[in-house]
View 1 (tube, rainbow, N blue to C red):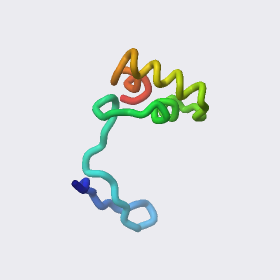
View 2 (cartoon, one colour):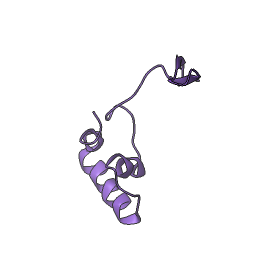
View 3 (cartoon, rainbow, N blue to C red):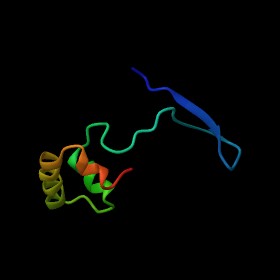
Length: 68
């Protein structure tokens, strides 16, 4: 299923596409790497492992501390 997009004008006059529905928080599954990036840190094996444990422990709430 292809996601719908919306066209909008940018400052330079060109058009850009963006998803018609934006997702935030824990409403979709998240990978440990995504959680590390959402925290604003570089992805390292140690941080990915910690993120895995956090996702197992807190579930969707793990990402909600970084995303609205």
